[in-house]
Image (cartoon, rainbow, N blue to C red):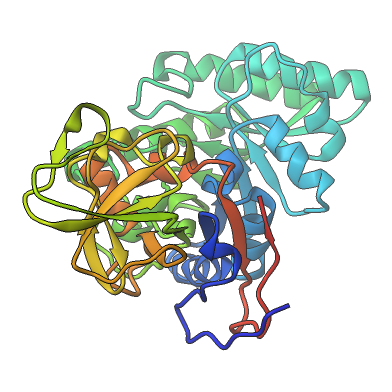
Length: 396
């Protein structure tokens, strides 16, 4: 293996990076972010749904647990089982399983499940009864999203049914959870109303005879900007990978970098149309550089006409539309040659465009872009430790 010395916050250019697009996953950033967020939460649940926001659920989970997280959250039971089969033994909560689903794996693997309805409660109790065990559940109250969770008018009935299931020995209510619809904007009135609904819901659960030990309402934005919503546990996902939904707290480090090699260059004159429909036309003599990645790799077509990349230490614009497999960069008079490496998405440690900037160009969320980075990208994992002396393993 090649040997390198990389200063803090940098990712060295490996031989593979000169021939293929690379997604560098910075677990050292995940470790930093976990420590920062855990310091502001009473108890931190690391949310590693969607394959750890696209960066590897098992790697992100293990890193977060080693640096302050106490539990893990996922969307589906399949995601929870993946963690268990990888040897992760920490508490795991799954909160978006279909009503009537077979929840036997939750019982067998010791996975907590969210219960937003009587149908979900019945599924959990049935699985526990079949296997002769007890399943831990978190009753899920809709506090204002009109999305997942139990509508407030049905909540007392759900609490009463959960208490009956407890007495029957099939479930144990260990938590009550909700979700804030307006946390990212730090909307004081909306968040106060949601918090009040949650407090009432917890009181109703206790009045039904339940004794949940974990109350959790807030996610990343709430941890950063709404300390009054902390309760017993905070669910943090986006923040682990460096996304601040509020855009107000520059304490997190980006955990993903995308680079791509230049595979072709050409010198052209003024008036040359580039790409499909010639949406870009050169205005003077210039050099065009071709990068081998496109929307199949997660670059949004909607960023065409706005996006830039960093090459030879300077930002240069994309020329024309983002294609499925390639983009063209107008590099001007820079001495760019095949084999040079452009930083497409940076971590904020250099002038490269960040994930947040790409999201702005595309009119979307950084979450969407990060979870959509394609499987064709070679992955390079930087561990949560001092800079390695050898290149970490790279794999598609």
